[in-house]
Image (cartoon, rainbow, N blue to C red; front, side, top):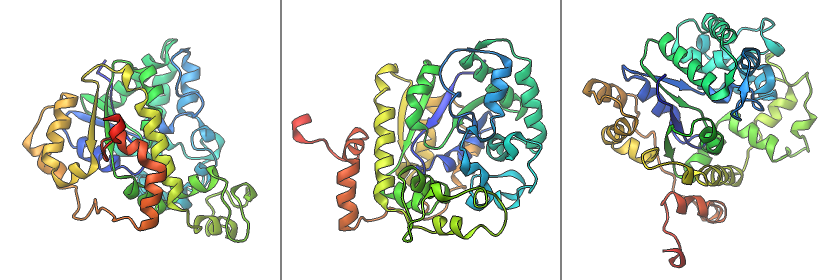
Amino acid sequence: MSDARFIVGTGRCGSTILSKMIDLHPDVAVLSEVMITLDFDKRFGNREITARELVDIIDCGLASTGELKKIVAHLATPEIAFEGGASALPEDASAYRDNVMPEIILIPLAHLVDDPASVFDELLQFAREQPTQLLSEHYLALFDWLTQRAGKKLWIERSGGSIAALPELIDLFPDAKFLHLHRNPLDVALSMQKHNHFRLRAFKHYELQTANGLRWTDLDETDLNNSMPMSNSLKAIMEHPVDEQYFLKDWNDCILRGMAQLKKLAPGQYQEVRFEDLITNPSAALGAIAEFFELRLEDDWVRAACALLREGKACHASPTKKQAELIEQYCEAGMILLERIPAAPLYT
């Protein structure tokens, strides 16, 4: 089995473009968003499970992103690569559990293979044939199978927001390598504000309400579906602005939860890369990443990967007075841990 390698970070840290760059490497299959598409309550915790339990973790219906999966067409998540994207999804998903399209088809398999729906069936059949073993052993077998199916030699898994799941990932893969891509929290927050999935997730998690008092819990089956046009209630929530403070708090909480576990890793298992460095000097950043992940450094790959970057991709926002106060209030601890700001003299 190939070694376990992961890219971790907060949401909107730039890991999607980095995964596309690395996926151009002739040896590497980037398993993009595989872990996040699995059953939310059962995907972690290293215990022995049967083949039947493994199939249920993969083919999990609403047990990954829940109600947000019901409105995937309205979310128009840009990462979805299946048959033209979220706006072109099949209207009928009755062949799948809970009448929703499996997210493992929509994102990871759609990026890996030409016929993701068929490969999903093959993947489930492979899972059904596995012996009872530790969940980590199942994952290693599955990830190797996906890698071979994609015609590559080794895999790197990358899921958005995965720095918060670092404790669980280390529990499953204590010998793995973890590359942490991080980005200025204000740029992350502003990007999340423009992304339907993160905006609705924050609206729901923080129990926000629209100007006329509408909450997420007020929505029902007439709202939570992919029918076009979307209902007026869902439209009102979709269009409701969410303040930066919620995204800044989320950034800091994720960083602190993940980095608290670094003491469990040996030297050489963890490395950080700034998104800003990836953009300003991509060749150097890719060289460091290749060395960390023990990849062949090929000039053709580096040139092709750098060509994916667009000018202005990492525009850095200058904070307003209010934003600067929010960053200091919510992000100071995370910024210090990542050495984006100096620690107070008391701690240096």
